[in-house]
Length: 392
Image (tube, rainbow, N blue to C red):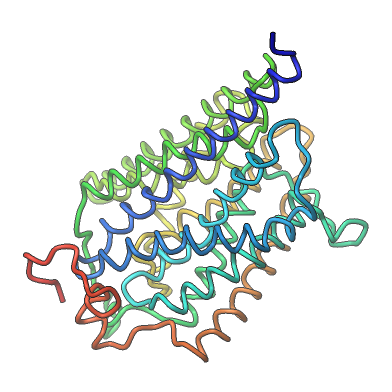
């Protein structure tokens, strides 16, 4: 007969492992989404980059990052190995955000080096001051920000790293020319839809697993509410994104609908377990609207982001974290704002220094003739669609 303590241990271990698997589904989610949004001549490079990031960043986190984040192997009421795997599943997402936003002109070797630094040092230090060992404890910089699953810790961190990378690497060839913005359409809409929906499904493990336990009635209810609110925010973001696009252009843009959904999902990530079932409608709707308006704004600023990652992850990471201070009871808005600012300054400055330094040794940006030929041929030697004529 299984003792109650063993039963709780087994159930929570299984729950964390299952949540980790759902989060890993976001790896093909990012890969498919990005592969569908870039030109056919860069698809293999994008897919290779996503697989590389998963391998490199996860290994760096295993060897160095986890203990830097938490001080030691964390003692929990379920398997410590499950605790590690769950945390490891998060680390690559910060770099997926950055790599997608610099697609079609970034080279793999410097990106891989940055992935090592992000997985071993930058992301673990952000986790340390938010969820982990807290080396800032007792200082004026100590954070009391609430961020359930990483609107700021993961999504904004990746977004700030992307912003630093865009400043250094620049835009794709001829993206902005003679005060004109060259529109580069998505190459494969079915892949975009598949990737977006895989990310949506993965978010249930992302947020639901962050509750940390499911082995009691109260915790099971909390997990279920968290997943419900996560889904609701995604629905609201998709609907509002689609409605705004139709009102403005009389067109239903599936890429913007999906980005609206992802914006809502990012926004709810900070506090999905804290709200009633209606508040996520508002938070997700604002998230979807922010995406629609932020994407053209970043283009006007000549910040070239092929997948809309700045709008989805950076803007809504900030919004979602601040929303906790607005809508959740007993959560200080000022504490939330302080966390957004401190982590933002740290993530941007350190990422900029690291990317700038790597770029001096191994340039991130592919030469213009390489971009014309396509990163598939230049970097991988394998074209995703060899039977088709490559787009210029």
